[in-house]
Amino acid sequence: GEQVEQLPSILRVQEGSSASINCTYENSASNYFPWYKQEPGENPKLIIDIRSNMERKQTQGLIVLLDKKAKRFSLHITDTQPGDSAMYFCAASANSGTYQRFGTGTKLQVVP
Amino acid sequence: NAGVIQTPRHKVTGKGQEATLWCEPISGHSAVFWYRQTIVQGLEFLTYFRNQAPIDDSGMPKERFSAQMPNQSHSTLKIQSTQPQDSAVYLCASSTTGGMNAEQFFGPGTRLTVL
Image (cartoon, rainbow over all chains, first blue to last red; front, side):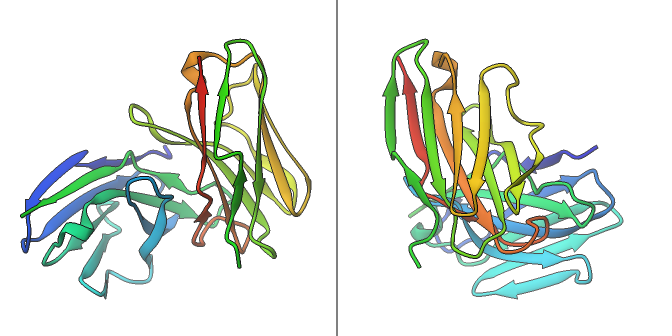
């Protein structure tokens, strides 16, 4: 079990509201959880990550939560702006030598 | 630092032709990854090199796809007898450490179109 599930696949929110993306993983040895943002026509770029020794991390309007018991982690974007519209990918990896597994992506649309 | 370089940015091939995609990782990065991105399948892992050695190619379609990393400054992904379903954006990424628990830096991708 190495899959990373990501939901929703499409998320449409009003400008100024918050957006939440959820991911679950199967490998209990996973200990690194990055989030990547891919703007249209661009390559994915890391925006925030969390390691298993933390339950919460916040930076510049982004919050990530990690629930190791439930094997679940989430990204919360507060006060969304049009510039937040993009594809977002979660990922999970472990020290055991396996590659970083990516979720299927969430297309976030922030509408005025 | 130019970031990860991928060439060509766009490639159009006819069905049955060969396509070779190039990736130059960030200098000093020891791990190189190849992914394929489509709207339907999302971001699919293909293969992974660490210190030029192939570590995991479990995502590679076995029959027509091959990847090499002859030196630390470039990797190639070769697709033989291309098919329309190979049309996708092929992304290369590199990472500083062994690659598992570190940020991956993605290149701009090569958009392959097979007619």
